[in-house]
Image 1: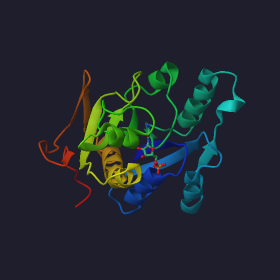
Image 2 (image 1 turned 120 degrees about the vertical axis):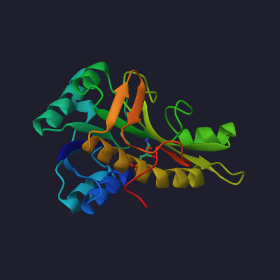
Image 3 (image 1 turned 90 degrees about the vertical axis):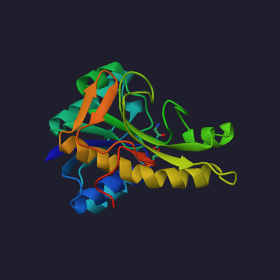
Amino acid sequence: MLKIGVLVSGRGSNLQAIIDAIDRGAVKAKIELVLSDNPDAYALQRCGKHGIKYDVVERKNFKSRSDFEMSIVGKLMDSGVELVVLAGFMRILGRDFISSYRDRIINIHPSLIPSFQGLHAQRQAVDFGAKFSGCTVHIVDESVDAGPVIVQAVVPVLPEDDEDTLSDKILNWEHKILPQTVQWFSEGRVKLNGRKVVVEGAKYGTLPVNPELEIFG
Ligand code: GAR
C-alpha cells in the first residue's frame, strides 16, 4: 500500500477526491498525513470526518522558509510518506524540500502547463481569450508549475465562460486526474526519462485526457 502525504491550504476538494477514490477501492494508497499551512483550511475538517491524521505547520512560526519546509519534511518522513501530493497547496517549495522527495512530489495545477502558471490560472485563461484550458498533474521540480507532465485534461473555454464557470469545469477533471495519478504511482508505472514522463501500459492519444484514465468509467 503506497503511503501518501497530502499538503493543502484551503477547501480540499482534491483531497476529498483522493479520499473517495481510496474509499471505493479505486486507489490503493493510504493517506498517512495531511499537512496544512493554514489553520482555517476546510480540508482539515474533511480529515476530521474521515479519521485522517493531520497537522498544521504555519510559516509564521519559523525563522526561515527552509526551517518551515524542513519541519514539513520531518513530519512526512516520520509518517513514512513515500509520495507527497500537493492538492491546492499554495506555496512554492524550495530546493531542500524538493531534493528530500526528488521525483516523489506531485502537484495539480488548473491549466495546461506551461500556459497560465502561478495564481488564478483559470482567470488568466479567460482574460487571455484562450479557447482551451484544462489541468495538469506534474512532478514538482525547482521550476514553478513547470515540472515534468504526467497527465493533462482539456476543457473548452466558451465565450460565456468566466473564471467561476471555467474553474468548475476544470475542477471536475482535477478530481479525476489527481487520484488516477496516485494510483499510477501505487502501481509503480510512472517512469521519468529526462523531463518526459511515461505511464507504463497507459493508452495515449486520446482526448480530452491524455493518457486515458483507468479508474473512472
Ligand atoms: C485547485 O483548483 C488546484 O488546482 C489549485 O487550487 C485549487 C485547490 O482546490 N492549485 C493551484 O492553483 C496550485 N498552483 P481544492 O483545495 O478544492 O483542492
